[in-house]
Image (tube, rainbow, N blue to C red; front, side, top):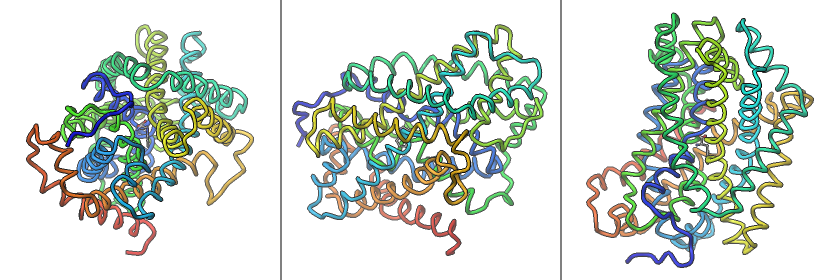
Length: 451
Ligand code: TRP
């Protein structure tokens, strides 16, 4: 049976559905978070785990989210309720809402940094002859309190503006043009980095696994990064797929999304690490890494100011397509479950993120001393969402689709209601039933030292 889209606003083209899903996945997670996590987790070992997790655990969970979203045409809660009477499953939806608001908060801070750097690049304020200055310059900015906070709020205001315009009109048009341009720019920078003196050292760091560095903590970080980068585990892909048309092939879309997302992360790594070693920087600088390395790269390029302005602007746009997707999670919940108007839901979503986003922005400055488990608010939000809440959410979703969901629903969705073949059904079911939940559980237990 083909579900009726009802009054829901569907993506108008298949390309639009894919581009928007990729737009959600590709963002700061690839270009900012991936290099910094790879850098602090020893490079190659992290990278190896990351790739394995993307395809072994990530792709099946995307398929599971897509199946739930399109079959129910609903948000996380609605989807769980649609398929099960149990009160237990929808509970995971609350974790999804909480995590999405937490991610939106700290993500907006980093997106705010991209706006600051777009403006600074354009005005020529970001051009120093020695690389050390890029570190000091970023440090001065990020600890400066009011400017980072201001950009966070401005970014959230822009996010708000787009959300008010609804799904297919606003986002789709946007992603369609943006993603390919960003991709081309990354390829140019990648070629540039490969010609640097430190290219060999950078690539060795990124691609040669040092198995001694393969600690349980590294594995957990790689798992968290895989889920973060794929926008997975809290119903984001689920919510987006609820807007897919019935002809969109879910398996193919999942694989395309995962591949493009991984390629962008790899390109970012290949851009960053040769430069890190060429300019004598430290790969383990943490969240500030990319904002110190990229400007140094641009400085050495002919016409650097233009590249720099354009790149940070595109990065800002890529962040926007991601924050729109994470906002849709709570907005869909507020409107469809709590029955409040979209406008109020968008306001509520933005207001919460504005409060916590400001706290995250200040945690590099005046709130730096405020620590929980040794982490600042920013780091705490970043760490707990990616490394705990998302994989946990992914585990619940794989268990639900693997064990609880009627098999016929999975088959219908993966085959587009019997119109296209899906040859790896057995494999998908095996991965969802066993490999995803057990794999995630083992990585958790391993990281807290239980096994
Ligand atoms: N995947 C996005 C990125 O890499 C971030 C993101 C968007 C996200 N929506 C999400 C992460 C939902 C987790 C959950 O930048």
